[in-house]
Image 1: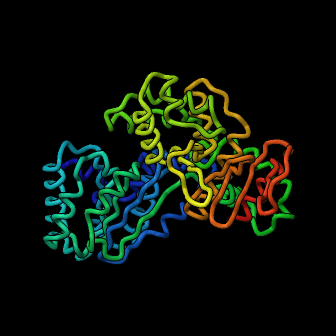
Image 2: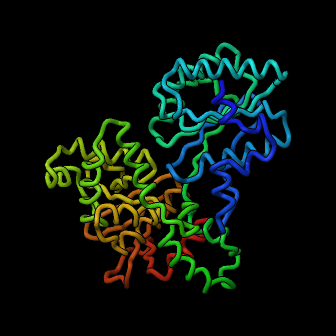
Length: 393
């Protein structure tokens, strides 16, 4: 299969990385770093790793960096990369895997390192891989599958009970603010030494967020939006309806809102609104923040956070809406708390608490607070946000 030689150029020539699209783009970037998630993957046979994260975050580039390292240590034919998006159907996937088994046999490969990129683009891909694992064809290898939809990946992961070996689940996300500081050369353990630089870089982070291209001042807003539209289209939904829903979100944030209100304003059902928003959550674009008092209330009005500053700006430009400063600050704090505690809620009765996570209650203010809050609520002013985010690290 000629396509496999194209996708795996290290089989035929040295210096392949100089011609590889993803590694060449990386080499041209002024600000480069090795993603930390690379070190979290398991490379002990047998492993089935699941790598998930938004489009444009660098999952493919990260895998190519791993491949570059591996090909210096193992037989070059022991490393196999396949972009699932190029395949027509499951039968073609089966044929490709079988063909690679012939290559393994001819080159006496005992343990292969197999990278299957964007598996969620092929419906029921897992049936083929599960079958090969069960038959013993792949059960001495290290397999890493990547995808951009967490809902699909989570469902497909459940199809492999007892078949993961030493495999791990890894999320590749835009850089947090402390990670952003680190790649900019700031030692975050020395907050006093770098105080002025930290605040200047926070202003930059508000603009560029944590995507590799945006950090390198590459305006990839059209590609980012198109990648989201493409994923929405794969679910049979309309990008135009998506745009209307996001426009309404920007008109209402940072206030809590109901799906009924959004739907009534644009003439669709609340169920349709809910479906689109859940899709965006599954694509790592936003996070639904539910109300919590003594317990979580899933029926009450929800808050929405956009999970990266550059994405928040891109969506605002796409919908021709203003990105409110208070919403941007609130989203950033909520996202960082969510990453630390794995949960994020809000509270409201006579007063509102923007962020509840773990044992922390945080209210975020773009200006000076105008009311008193209970003693166990931390009220953050704009100038206090950078050091608070560092403290979560």
